[in-house]
Length: 393
Image (cartoon, rainbow, N blue to C red):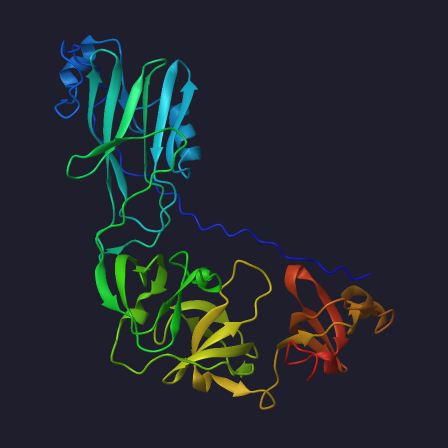
């Protein structure tokens, strides 16, 4: 019996990059408690020469805390906010911004002081990417970790560059203010999707739309991508779409499937970097056009996968002018188990319960062996391979 498997893949887009650690010396100790009330704005950082003479210790940074604490911090760095855990006689605190799509973020301890002999007050600042400045296109997890003796009260504060501070609470995500943005104009005409991250696999996951010719705010850049804000929405777009405001616009042009003439790479934008390998005979569906290029949809069999790319118009042929290596088997098509067909020929057919896209592996005596999602494979009559998903052709 033929088993139709559903391919499920988990998109993991993570490059583990540790944040920079604050240089606070080997360990820090509280100074003598002042007699007056809390003086937060004038706290001075503890001095290194005091550390050897005091018993209460605070350690800041992955290279300063015990190994077990550092491992806990690494395992929880993707969670935005403040996390706390008791570990081997210590209270460990992790302050994290969660997952960020580029480099350029940093958390740093700016000062630590003991408030009236009652609690530690520790101030942090956050550095964000400079708007319009290119950043490494990698997933990062900016964070900082510290320990104090178990039971020691701690107040953590996030401070802005102008000195305004707010207290951080456990289990509450850290929300950063949007940076000052650089205004730019999107290519004219049409509408363009904004995507959740700076990677080609996100081209199949649009989350918002921006109007061609509109003015948008560039929050940050990462490689070939820019992070935009348009009204109440923000997202990522290939930087090519912000160039040539006076050039010929990208136009909507949805067409029937065409056949790729030869092996080549699909590109992120016309003349841009390759983002996916495409095989000769593959079906591509033009969705947009710009000069001598098509932005085309790609049939995929497992995810994550790049599902759209730019290709030259002259790389494609109409159906009928070339033998395709790809197509559709419609619901109700007779198919034969691969191993059974190899051994006994076309006997004991099964009926497909739904329409599926397939890629032709080989051909023999009027039959084709096809592959589909999840490793499914079978034989069927060559005439059953259709060039449209709809059954009316």
